[in-house]
Image 1 (cartoon, rainbow, N blue to C red):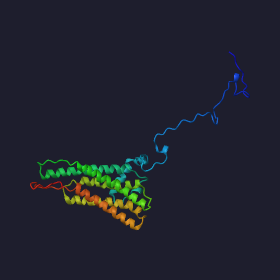
Image 2 (cartoon, rainbow, N blue to C red; image 1 turned 30 degrees about the vertical axis):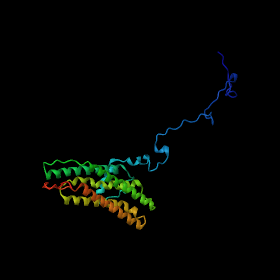
Image 3 (cartoon, one colour; image 1 turned 90 degrees about the vertical axis):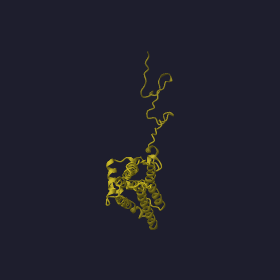
Image 4 (cartoon, helix red, strand yellow; image 1 turned 45 degrees about the horizontal axis):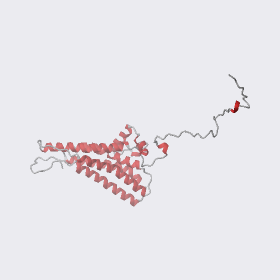
Length: 266
């Protein structure tokens, strides 16, 4: 076996018989091989800022702890509680979604329970059939009011040039404002019409006050005529929601004599 001596200074790149040794370390243009492509995992950082129509835009708003959600829920029952945005930093959509969903279940279950009790007190031998159509009706009303109305208000404010309020802020305020209807719907099982009217009035006042405290500072920055119009529209919709709940879900009563064909449910 033969060994070839290589001069480290003069022949580093060239060996015997034209054999060359090249180093690719630190070379500015080492061949045509390119770097491996980066992998896109579908995150927001790989695609830049996401628009409000994408799922990635709303993911951070569901990252909220339970204590914050519960605090924002029970403070809606206190007339002089802090506003939604000043209660804690940031806003969320997790609480408003579950408040609205829980309210739908509470409306259906409490209305069905109260109607069955009313039927039994009217005629113990009568059989009660659950009206599952009320569940779909409750879902349509609650989701439309909790998500449709704030989006429409946000669009109206954008049209008027008021950009201080985001769409997530509007959804959060309206979602948490519906929390008061959950305990009220449970208490409205009481078979007493006057008591139910009082409970509905209390819920209307508390939720309305909560909405006013949160949205009036934003509406005040708009044009005076437009502000008055928006306040009237919001007030009418809020009163319509209260009357709708009372008529559709809390209007059962006891009828002692069913011989005339009276319905104890409505």
